[in-house]
Length: 323
Ligand code: UT7
Image (cartoon, rainbow, N blue to C red; front, side, top):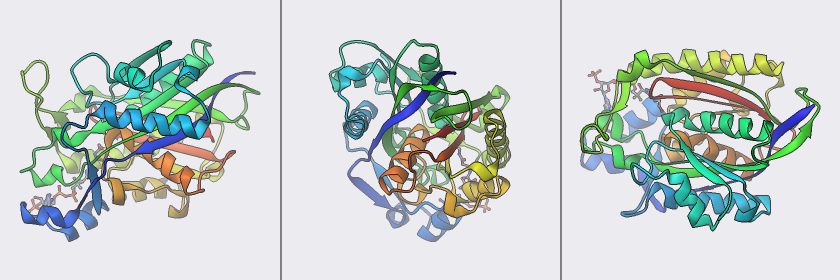
């Protein structure tokens, strides 16, 4: 017995501007072939000038409300995962709250970079299971294009902008893995690895800065830690890889996604892959993939879904839920 955080609706928004890999060949020593074969990325969407992270999040939030058949007044809390809030403060979530016309409840940001949506889901789950909120909008939204050094070919070809939103609602559960809703959470971080993926700017430097990444090292950690955290979350839920209907991984690199699926003994037919169209959208990648997978009719009510992500910190984790 107890309260479960059950999916009530999902939605997303992508900026209109689509940039194909070949575009980068004009300004950088790179190729569509290199980007495609090393990362699986074919194109990405980039926010228009003046279009902020909260702008994208508001559109994703509206789409999720429509999908759920709810209005902003029905939402008790917004938990927003982002590392690219419009301003240093206030929290982008409060801008989204105002933008959606939500005048009660509360809203705050969660910052765990590419793993942010997992940490935001964990927060929302805690709010619902302890009775502090009945309906929570969980958003992942980013404009990583604003953090790119457009002369650094090793990073600028990998990232994109976008937003996804999930609405979770309290519902009674039997306390077993047969319940709908969030079944288990596994969170981790290890600040000793802070220098392999970071932004070289911020409040202490007086400028926004650019993303810097030791790609190969992050890759090595990702494959190992993502399968470990997914296994840990499944074990906490009392499930095994065989129970999984869909793996919805953070979309950073197709090679990482394939290696993780293999370690979980899941065929690629059971993995939602959007990295080819979105690039790495950091905290937005999982809710974008959930929204696309649901809209395509792949993820169905009752399905067991495993989400996992890793990013700067390092911070990583996994959430298992029954859709
Ligand atoms: O979301 C947060 C988590 N982030 C990730 O999970 C990203 C993890 N890392 C990766 O996805 C991969 O490491 C990358 C896609 C970033 C790079 O792939 P890689 O197979 O690890 O390549 P590499 O960094 O070892 O680079 C191989 C070569 C280098 O040349 P040399 O030193 O071998 O001569 C790079 O200079 O490829 C070169 N290179 C490029 N060449 C053409 C790097 N970027 C490019 C580029 N175009 N855009």
